[in-house]
Length: 217
Image (tube, rainbow, N blue to C red; front, side, top):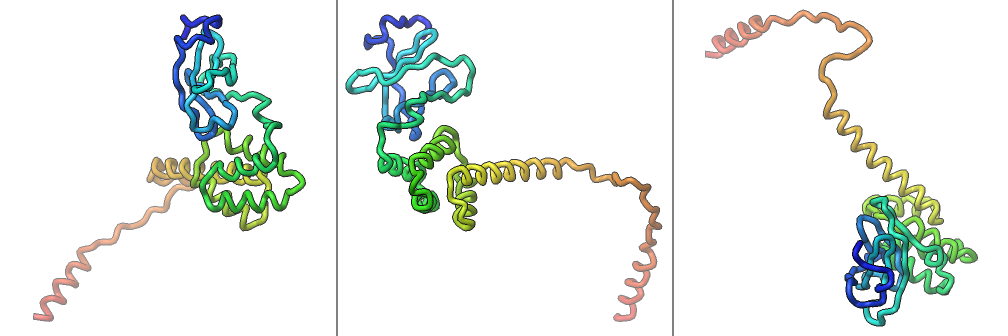
């Protein structure tokens, strides 16, 4: 990529194919870059120079978006214009959010959310995208959070995000506790000296057992 020139970005030479994730992100040099949501799970072409990333539509060849390359591994970058999605209607945003996860609880939560916050649907959709679209989500923990929020009628996506974060911390904490338990020193570590206990002589019991066997014969 360092050999590529910004002046040749419109040439087909030097381009590479990338498949966008189901959340419309592509990975380039250990960082993730957001594309418009219509490119979810679709193949695009990229052209990388020393400092810039250009993304092109595979079929039309038109430039979709460009980014300054991140030199910090693991960063997730997005464009503000794709955050607001002003070109989408509330109906389109609702459909997008409903399809973010296949869980029945997710669908139930979104329906109840849109009904509860009917005057703020766009804002709720933006919260859903901000909290659950641009990061890896543990589906088991998400299910726990959804069940809790549905049961307790805490139906905003902000509530769901806070609940998810709580269950995520709890799950990590329980793992840490298990690790600590596994490495505990089995010796007494209390504040007081342990009491001395006289060890019982077992020969008395052995003699009783032998005598009882003799009596039975």
